[in-house]
Image: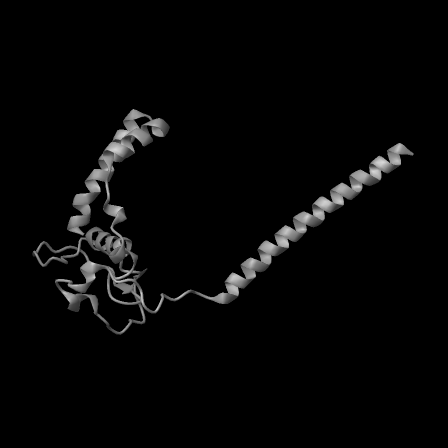
Length: 168
């Protein structure tokens, strides 16, 4: 008789576990469906304005608005540091004479940059954290997980990116 009761208890425990798992999965699935049906988020109406955007040296550059072409080779969403770097890299790789220095090159790709507001006015304009380099802190932390040589390479790369950002 004890074996039957034990078997029933084990079955009840297993069924309870399955029901909990299905319930948890269903809740996650319902949350996913709700996110899908919500659609894309749009930027907030009144974003925080960074102090360096208030007195920008060339404000007319940020307000470039044109017709969106029907065709493009590449569409970049966002004109922040990542979008700007992607566009710069695509032009450099194309070898096009984008600087007008007469060296020729092949035809540049047709690139369209989509931005919700002004160029470079989003998170890139409000946050300079990506240019902060603290090698004295990073090296010690990275050395513990990567080893001395790899940590040294990572810190050197972080320090080099400052010059690259200035050129961008």
